Length: 291
Picture 1 (cartoon, rainbow, N blue to C red):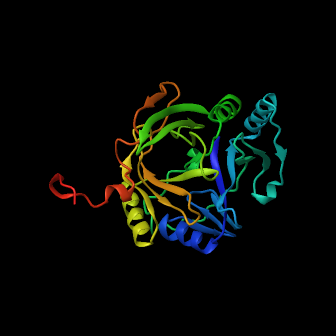
Picture 2: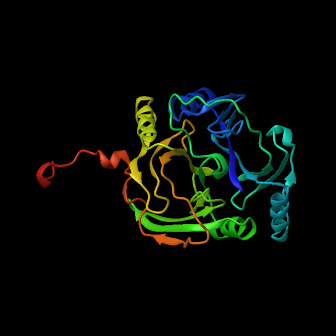
Picture 3: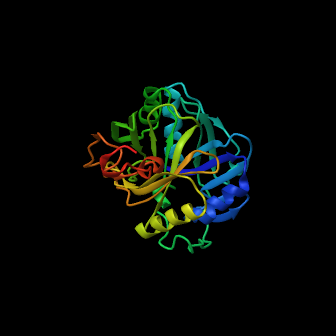
């Protein structure tokens, strides 16, 4: 299974188009869709007032794996409804809300394309393909219920957890993988919207730096400066999308081998960096004095 697509309902599609193409470096695929690999599309935006996640698409490798997931969900009292696959251009499609009310879709056969990507802004390309488009951090007011759903019924595996305090806020995050990508999904409590952020991964560290520059020049609000996470090893920065939730753009995420992997609990969110700019660059008193 992989994170197959993200669908956002946004109030300003033009701003999103500029953000996705001129900042993140994705390739437009028409009809409000964008891509970063051989999938015909990975991201979709449609106009609406929500400014939030409209659907998360989890793509299964084949019909047998999808059928097994549907059977497992039924044992937990969850019964996805069959949807029209033509809407996504896929082979099969089932719809369900997770325990937090996040709309999810289980699909097979998302369309592929041989069309080249526009690599002018991200010449090194993106880490996607069989690992999925990246990762997603979603709201989970009842983390135990969400964990029972994703891990217990859908077969996601725990990668690790982070429990700490950051700038006076308690952090308790759980990270799950559905394939060798360190995590495709994470959650840790209630968020203002259905998601906290989505992550796009570049193959080159320099492409992260260049994207950081484009974001600053483009007036994107940076929410966390460049830094590195201890659990997945990702070198990244965070910023705010036109819909006010966040994105992460990174490089160097770890690959999980289930034969040797042991989940770990970390006591910090970052090894270094990832500072809120308003704190990192706040005026400091000179020579330890107060002025």
